[in-house]
Amino acid sequence: MLTKAKGHLQTHFGYDEFRKGQEDMIQKVMEGKDTLGIMPTGGGKSVCYQIPALLLRGVTVVISPLISLMKDQVDALDKAGIPSTYINSALSSDEMQDRLAGIYNGEYKLVYIAPERLETPSFLRLLEGIHISLVAIDEAHCISHWGHDFRPSYLHIKKLISSIQPKPTVLALTATATPQVRNDICDLLHIDEQNTVMTGFERENLHFQVVKGQDRDRFLLDYIGKNKGQAGIIYAATRKEVDRLHHFLEAKGLSAGKYHAGMSEKERNDHQERFLYDDITLMVATNAFGMGINKSNVRFVIHYHIPRNMEAYYQEAGRAGRDGEESACILMFAPQDTQIQSFLIEQSDMEEVRKENEYSKLRKMVAYGHTESCLQQFILHYFGEENPPECGKCGNCTDDREQVDATVETQMVLSCIRRMNERFGKTMITKVLTGSSDKKIKSFGFDQLSTHGIMKDKTQKDVSEFIDFLTAEGYLRPTDGAYPILMLTEKAGNVLRGKEPVLRKERVRISQIVEDNDLF
Ligand code: ADP
Image 1 (spheres, rainbow, N blue to C red):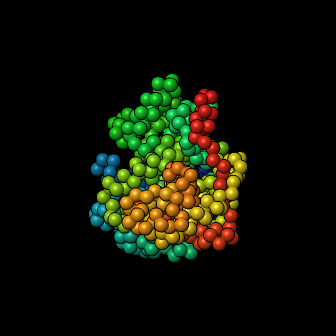
Image 2 (image 1 turned 120 degrees about the horizontal axis):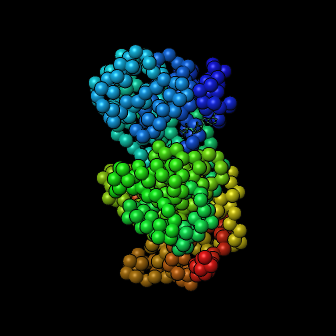
Image 3 (image 1 turned 90 degrees about the vertical axis):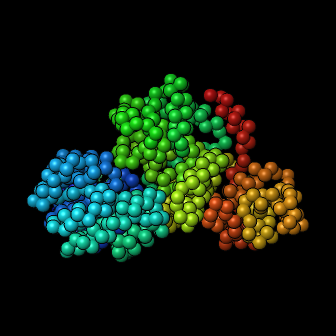
């Protein structure tokens, strides 16, 4: 069977070897096992259902939320000599009838449908009349409330699967699955967790970097200046900021495209096409840009503001270097930007429990900005990989500042938190450590603690940042919600008992960075 699969890989797709995970996934599908496949963006998920579609009898139904991508996929399959079609709301009713007739007559091996179709009972009945051997679900995390892109229409997939006789094999695919999302997908689609195929999330050609304490516009200009002619995406959090940055770059003589949901469709398509065809190399955009775009030579992705969670970050940053060439993913981190994202969560109409979950995810993203450990390791760890190695090339791995011993300072913070009974958040803890004696502090009697004012030689900002660092490095665990309480972890216990030292990179004064910046 696998020899045949490889034959198809060569004749239809022109590749000699399977990539990591592809063979395993195809084997499972061919054995009729319902499977969850997790691979990073660009890992090559499509062939994992396209090749089985060729080997199996009847039709493979592919559920995909990206209408724009459907057409591209079907066009590409046409070129590869694989009969396929798609059905979505963009078709006229004549086209729809033609295609449905084609499906009945067995003219296609693959049929792509948008999940919204599944909400129409008459459409489900139509599918009952054809032989469907495989249902492939792209972007399967959309089925989970805990994912970063929940779509209610995905919940109808279950109905589709149970209405088809005999039962088809199910292949759920995603690039972003935390353990929580993974469980949800398996539960909702009745996939045995043992049938999960997960390839490493590592993208070897990506260099991660966090930039902080710098004038962002200057950094941007400098970076673009040093990387002239290379394609890059700059993500900003709001339409207004996209407009401003776009204007700023153009005013500096750099031609750039822009993309956000406030522009007309024509305008957006126009800018997008120009970027895709290398007519312009820079694109300034909100997160509305990028879904379903397959531009392989993007050399850098810069986030001007922090995104709402690690899933979104890795997906957006991962648009760099799809061709395997060395590429950079830079996050410009200013802790105050977190407020934009908190505001968006607060304003959303999510249920309270989901909001809390979103806050927790945002906090992980903030921790990414604060960590001094390997950035790639941090990401891989977030996505559930155990003991990922250090990459040796990210901004933190290559940071050659001296490490200084911060054990005593850490012990001060930790013992203060313990004395406050682990019931308060960062602001209160900072106040006690720096010796504030406001009404609230007095009412709790914290001005009487031995740790009150123990760090009074430092500014509140420095102490607050130090607490962020300790949280990012796993000494403190924040509770859920908008105003988390900080609690001690096991690792913190080790430091308090003097069993583990804490090392931190030597601080560089902001004024020094600004002076350096003045050089360009
Ligand atoms: P994903 O859906 O995981 O983001 P795609 O299925 O779009 O990724 O594949 C990404 C790219 O990798 C495509 O250009 C595809 O043709 C290519 N690709 C897939 N499988 C292989 C392979 N075995 N060898 C080389 N390239 C491959």
